[in-house]
Length: 135
Image (cartoon, rainbow, N blue to C red; front, side, top):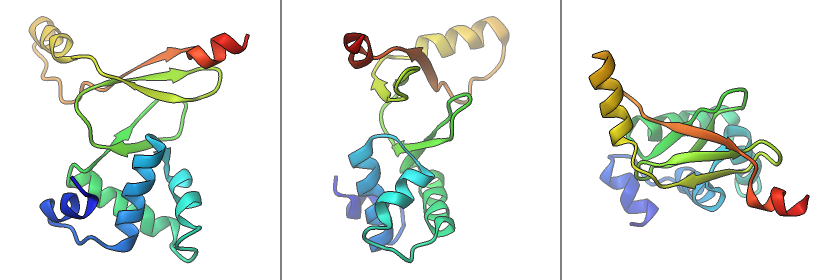
């Protein structure tokens, strides 16, 4: 689906700035707020960090993008995807998606604790294959 249709389906105007944010996230996969600003500033040099943040928050609320929280790192943003885990290289910092079902883990936690799992976002600290082969 095009980014224009995606925004319109979620009742947001397809502004050039929002489209550029989505293009950036698609290109990068995972990007911090500062990463997005650095890339977007080439096309929109006067676009402020607060405007980018406000637009990202609107798209978070509309479930167009997701926030990736990793301990001891800045928050990353990505386009909304099917459930997956993140592999975070402890050497180079690269973040990769790994598609695996997390439903069974959530159900097991709920069954054993009586709690309700609201978010089953997981990440694993790894050394990526590129870093391993460089050694």
